[in-house]
Length: 322
Image (cartoon, rainbow, N blue to C red; front, side):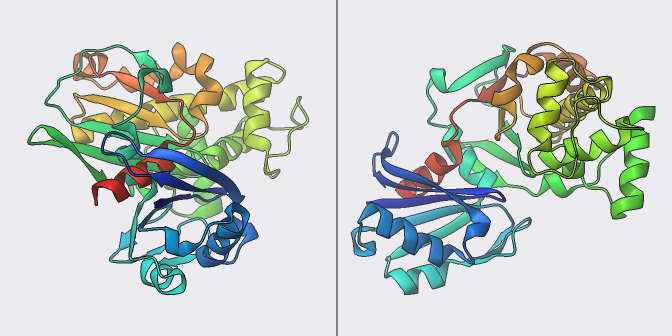
């Protein structure tokens, strides 16, 4: 049996799978609040107890983690955790334990998704020999590349979400100035993420929010999106439009950097929840607005990942192939 994990900044998914070369078969999946546990082994112990499963039943384990993986260890970016594959192996006696970046894990997952598990945002014309890119905004911002090599896709990790944010308009410059005062260096995920939407909200409101939203609340990103879509607050509408614009622009940047003529997948927890806003508006306009390469980007297929377990599935795919 395979054990897979998708360890995120807010929640962690753990699952048991039966191996299958085409697509691992899900046996059981549970969701945990990441910071309810002080490390991965304590969470795994709870998972095994809840599933009445012995760790000795697991032949291989693979965990996608939200941070750079160096060797068999990872320091999570937005959570005070250090994940050590050797420790998991020692504590639970699992013969093979692997770590990979969470977006790299999701990249393995998108290779086995069914048509019903994605929504086509831009049809484009996919080059069957082209690279594919993956971007996902949630608690933070993740990016990955699927290289096309010898007729198959090879997922590669990235920490592109921590690259510098590049403002393009006067309003984005205002956001950049505000964030520079607050944080110093401004990385892309300070703008393109759930917390990024809350950061933008501060700039677009010069008084009380008409929807009564406090950007310091943990659920403020969802509240801002809802208020914007219902047009209950002009400041929320502007914040949401700025967010969509920046998200689309960064997705276009990733497509150019990776020459993703095979397509772009947009994953993460935010995109499926705001699907109607992505269909036509700032996101697609900003994605394409890359003079002199607009025609290239108009031909890049864009698909929204609807399967909320794509990262977990990808970790299981990696375990199967390993």
